[in-house]
Image (cartoon, rainbow, N blue to C red):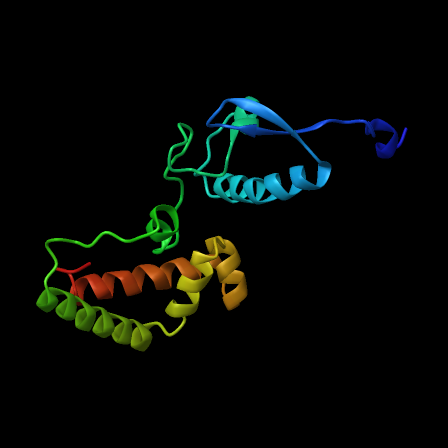
Amino acid sequence: MSNQANQNPDREYKVYIPSTHQFVPVTKEFYYEYYRPIWRIQKEAQKHGRCMCPRSKLWRCDGCCLDCPYHSSGNVWSLEYEQELMGDKREDPTADVESIVTDKIVLQQLFKRLDEIFPEARRIGELRMEGISERDIADILGMPRSTFRSRLEKVEALLREEYGDII
């Protein structure tokens, strides 16, 4: 039996309205236009561990994670996540211009030193942010995993020695 035979041509399409807790009958086109963005948000949130909604409750999702009881912090990689979620950013009330400028200068020095002692570090950071495992990063860089790990440990020890109060 084919998939086409399993589909009912007389299927009634309904959209759930959370505010009224009711289903509203709609056309097939409207149904997919309404739910596709919600499904995309759900899938992305589930991929990053932010949606813990049980399968039996997925039909209630309206794509708004802020007030969802199944929302979790998940593995947030983006610094803009708060802005994506809340629509704005909260300022740090304790931050002053001097400390921000000082932190930026120290961070630039740290990156410069890291580039000097381990030029591959920037590429490794990019690959890690993509979620690639250490084993795969070592393969990409063309070195055994043990060599990769020992280099990372040496660089970390050297940076801790030089920048111990920051790291």
